[in-house]
Amino acid sequence: MLKKRKEVTDEDFYGLKIGAMWRYFKGESFAFWMVCAYLFLEYVRPQSIYPVIDFLPWTQLVVIGAILGCFTDKTVRWVSSPINHLLIIFFFIILLSSYLAYFPGISFSNLDKYYLWVIIYFIIINVVNTPRRFFVFICIFLLASFKLSLSLSIIWAGRGFSFTDWGLMGPKGFFQNSGELAIQMLVFWPIAWAFAHALKPYISRKLYLVLLLMPVTAIMVILGASSRGAQLALVCQLLVANYRFVFRPRILVSILISMVLIWNFLPEEQKQRFETMGEDGTSRQRLLYWENGIEMIQDNPVLGVGYFNFASYFERYYLGDVLLGRAELPHNIFIQIGTDTGLLGLSVFLGLLFVAYRLGRQFRTEHCNKNERIIGRCANISLLGFIVAGQFVTVAYYPFLWVHLALVVALSNSFNINRKFQLKVVKKGH
Image (cartoon, rainbow, N blue to C red; front, side, top):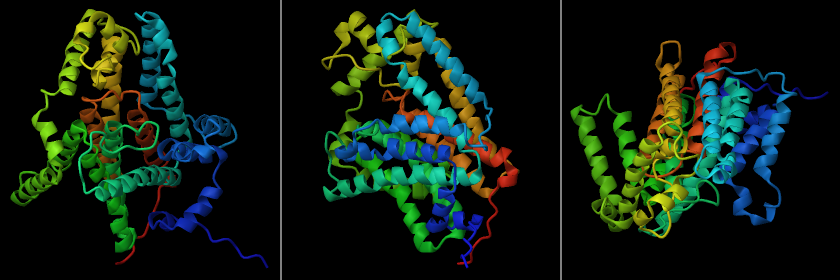
């Protein structure tokens, strides 16, 4: 007689029962498999770590597979959100800006840096459409980021927490540069903290402590990455996360002690970088990018100088202000969007940030359970980290914002709209 397969329960998910979750995953749709595979390939980048398997365009293939899988997945339904409309409007603004750009060829050759994120966004929000799917998806996001944070924090500890000009570097891809790597950690650690805190009543103390390694190692990477902007963003995140309690004597003392410890933990060379901020060559070049970028927007207020035209325009009209050999992108997300698409595109971009913030805040209502409120609030802490750090690097078309938008919309759709599928879990005694 065949043994009946044990049913996967909600308690298995919140208890992080890997075997049960794997049984659930195997029974899921092909579209969901492909979405999860995309996240793994984009964030872990095994094809970059092991060149022997880098013989196919893996990320493109799984995206195509996810699109095809949507036609056979009966659970996929169109998900409505104000973000959907803003993303499409922003794309049309980019197209118009590219057509009227000073250097149209440069603009059109970079269109994939935006429209691919739109495709990925729509795939995620329409496929990741139930609490269980969202739970698995966020687990992959956290594990992929933890793989980076754990390995790099060990590397930093192995060299005695010393300073290097290149900071810490991830695998080839979006997180290779230390500045971009640090932003991923800024996005990752609040969600990781929320995840660990939300599951604390349902798991053992040992497993809870293991989960806490995720935010701890992420913060270590931020400190070791030698990115002043990311470290400033981390301070802002910690202050905002504790703003309700910051003026209580015990909390205020704890924060001050933590900041002193973090400062003493930084290598002397990194402290000197803060002390010379605004005076070193890199800072002076960025100030010139910002000053002249604002002037570009003033001279071209409607659609900017053209999508991805900043560097070429800068070298043509501000050649005397190129201090470091050649012009780069403006090292500021708002100036990047403003010069790319003018005030028209910048207003839409700000609208995306505002709607994402409102989506995070909606999980504070009485209609949401405690876990949803924690994750929603921490999603806004992640968004804050991206915005603050984005004032010093050019990352508007990196995955940070676009994947974040997909996550908050999927979270909202899975838990708010599909109430009948909501996870109901009985807390374990400790």
